[in-house]
Length: 357
Image (cartoon, rainbow, N blue to C red; front, side):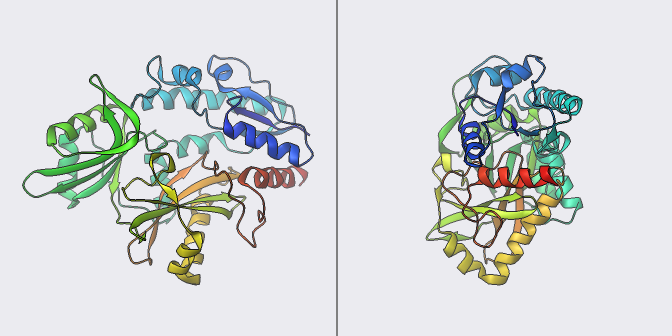
């Protein structure tokens, strides 16, 4: 049997999944480039096989097809990205149906996970704890009005269709017109670009310019929940759930509100996190992740961003990621079906079990 992967040839995700296939005694997967699909080409999917849809990654050609020509590092273009991406997902799903291939990630569910507003609403309706969200905002003035109405002084402002913290703003306000916006978006004269350095804007004109630049693509704004910390570093968890079971966990720590590892975050001690939560707290946290994943029953794998609040007693789901399994060097939790396996090997094993059934 051979898998089909819609992804980017040579990308780390594609290569690690291919290695997992070979380690399981299979041929490497047939890789269908995203650029081919986005140009309207028929995806050559292996008939009656498992189909994995992966992230387009950092492929500049795919990005240009998704967002239009321009600097790949620019912030924005998410609305066009989403419309183009979801249309391509529909074509992939139709091609899979024509040849009897089984999708490991449901196309409609991927579309929901790639829209933070829709994802938040689905989780909330299922009773999964999530931060309180504000009604839609269209610009900085509207954001401040919504914050005032809700009595919120600190929020996370997220592009509705962003990833890797692109354009995410941790915004804090104070009496007297004081503001502070922490973000990786750097102003480059004609617009904002993604930077690998987190920075702060502390004047209202700067913050307004940033929010007003992001708003046309759609925003998701939610209450900034103060995170628990270890050794002076705030943290959250990336939890990969495979076939309904939380299997792989990384503690992401940072001295800034952004815990993403590519923005200076660091992996923390998972043992320390488990000790701080206690046995029952850890079990509750993993149960919340499983409940979040259950909102997407057609997806073999999801990555859950779990926020642990100050006091270590309450948790909330920040996001659910369709492509949240890139955790190099992390093997499955002891006692799980993925023990000793990385995220890709665990998914290959789970997919084979489903295929056999």
